[in-house]
Length: 527
Image (cartoon, rainbow, N blue to C red; front, side, top):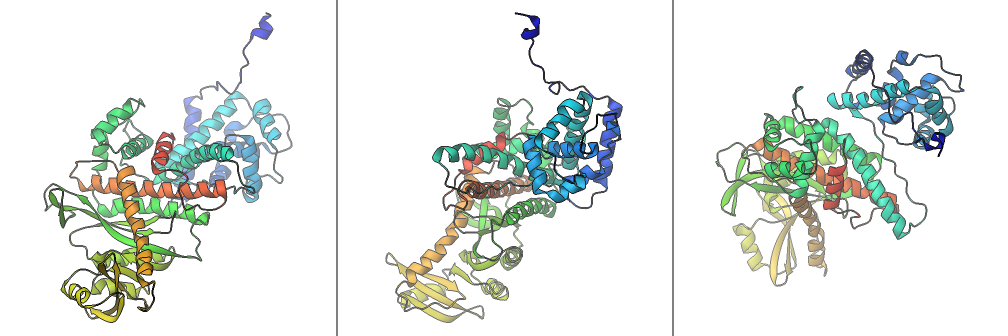
């Protein structure tokens, strides 16, 4: 065979030249100067594209219809946003015409124009500069903990999809969404790395997610992950960085910012309609503790599995089916007042959603907590604590029965007594209930049954998303707990988005399990 036909096709962009150090430093200096002038933690990619110095690209290129600077900025934008194909870039520009105008386009170039520009006009060196610039923009944004705007592309189906199409689209979209969400949160997750650390933030994030997914300790999790990946921090390194946190408020603030980012994503996609009312549940959860009972943040509790102490956290969850999103989690110390924790949770939730009713645990059955509910103008339903007056009431009162203006520490409430399988139960509420309603017991149990949604979320967080530890350091425990809440919310958010993409609506059942989500999220590299 002639040598002419024996050659292997070579794509000239497959082996781009290595840029010299001075050119790299010039690009990095320009990018740093842009980010240093940014005010806040969010920046539009288009704003960076407008301010990029393109002097390094100045060459005598052949003439083309569109401005070279505009085409260059568009391609760097494409790389920064991790759009793989020119068709995606063209579609993005058509859907964001204001951004296209900021790039200098009066009309949008087609795919062939961009392809011709990169393959026939730009040289290897220019493409190497483009790739290096886009890569450094993402790296510097991560260093500054700045969120580069990334949009979720929700395309609701116009017709019912076949089972095979749903399967293929589900797999593809799950990975796309997981990659985008991971990219959105990673800038705000501070692992307290020093400049000389040999590991990247994403190395630590992947290890943490792997430990959460496998329900493993740092020591064994690091060793087993090294069998799958080469560059993995060891347990001592991970714990060393987590133990560098010295302020509870700082750690809580970091995760609150991330929760807020997720909520913004959900709100932009109208996943939680601002005009609709939602039921919420509030509860405490304890993480058993076997160390010194006088250690910081350790609280007393009912004896269980050989200890009567633990670390305590409070959460408020939306408990609608399929949308059990955790709005806020708070650490609870031995000197924190229950009514203060309740007030913070309710105030935070009211700023984000309209609340139909609050379902609370009997731990909130007190005059001070009831005052908080009334002051917030919120309806509530919760079991009564089994103290002497309530026990006596259950003995002498037939069910069903509604006792109005029952006084709890000089605060009037309604006590609803209902019976189920021969046992009486007492619930407290500030709503009017009709004791003559033949379905009263069913209605009370059905409504309060929604609170088990928060129990379900705790179970998923504990058994699917929380790493194990024997560390007595509170910051390690707190980080792991908040990480479990974060991963749970990520799963809920991705599950809702998948439903909209596949079916055009939210299904009551999850379309992706927590375990599968965790596996895909961990396997998405690069953040």
